Length: 243
Image (cartoon, rainbow, N blue to C red):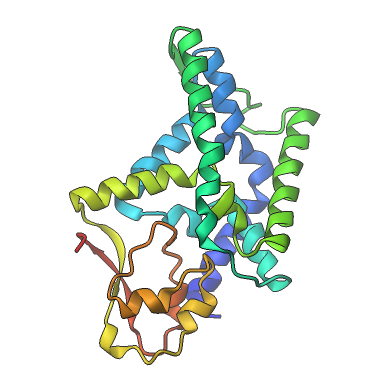
């Protein structure tokens, strides 16, 4: 495994191990709970940061920091199965009603009145009670089941409540062509070995995108796997404007 990928996987493994302590800062339910009390919670702020980060880093968070990514990629060792990207729209069946509920709850309470980053935490830590532990275990078990039954990073594709924020930020970035972290290709160097496609953790047809000289995809998480495994150095990182 290339050194950069060892570092990346090490980081997401550590963040996964820290998940019990930081779970509330990524909780979709806590935003609803806070909205019902007119409170902007820590998770609300975190999701806003993820949206803004996509202007400059795309979905880099998903590959390099996301706490749930660690357990998903660890599952590759036992179940290395590709996911069908045709059904990525399923996550919006969860995301749109969730956003609607947040807006409704905030409206019924007269809007947001205060900011409390540590809302419902104990000295900044999650897991204040058995109920929180139960929810945490549901998320972990669901993630593992999806990874084994559906395929690689299945939660990212079908159930993630954070990715739509970054996908939205990324689309705005592309519309306005702001400089950001991207992938660039030198198509003529490609020898069609398809190593990039075989090893993409998001089950993308990277080789096909290289051939089309367009390696922009909302599901790309900028993990750099295709860069590090390509012997011909066809793909590289670039901080630049869109084409």
